[in-house]
Image 1 (cartoon, rainbow, N blue to C red):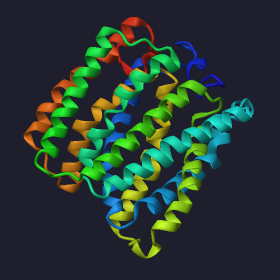
Image 2: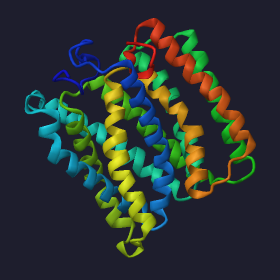
Image 3: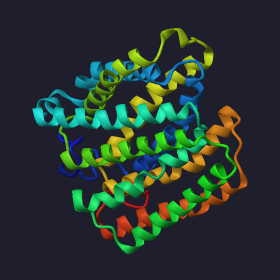
Length: 326
């Protein structure tokens, strides 16, 4: 792997036959990311039943960041770490504020008063914001096929949202908070691709996690109480999954995928989150899934296919999004 594997467009993996990741392996990574990311909403909701959101986030990010930082030199390699500049560290700190403090902090407060499946649907709007801003910021072209795919994805999201909001089953203020969090995630995605920080995936992820913990700590101390933390089985299962499967596994996969594709196509993976998020909410928490939610999944799935197909044909993306490329 290149020493600049975390640097977005400047990084490339070795050619086929020199240790490169095959298309099958990349497809497996994409599938793993979708499963980990979408299930995180239900596991977070599980842990939040016994712990305030910001305290839970500080603990999660501190544990995950500390583990990754301790292993970073061995996993990422000392040469890759030596290539990092002060600018790279600052860029990762900014991404950590956007991805962890803003996105997760605001989103989890909203999650305490909304369902996990509904949260997953709203966060899936992330590709729309990324696609609109990736052109002027990153020079990524948004052709007619991509517009059609993103439009279909939005249509599916709207159908699902309508089924939840019209019936008054979800909290309006919680919806606003989740929307703000989604904007933070989109900004973090764009910042990562724009600044292209050098260093290893684990090092960059560790810096972002620890940054989020530091930023959120004073807010947690001022607004929440340790007396509201109850160490139950559900809390421990939820926290463990969030630390190891999501913060270390899911976020590591996300930033790896960003180094292998355009920001728009990588973010289009979030359109897979509504069906998976609804499924895990139903499976783990017994959340109700209205019929309109199921109908909304169809244009979402078609939207994913169109966006990623357009990217492959245009040659703008590396094969992280598709199993058909080698």
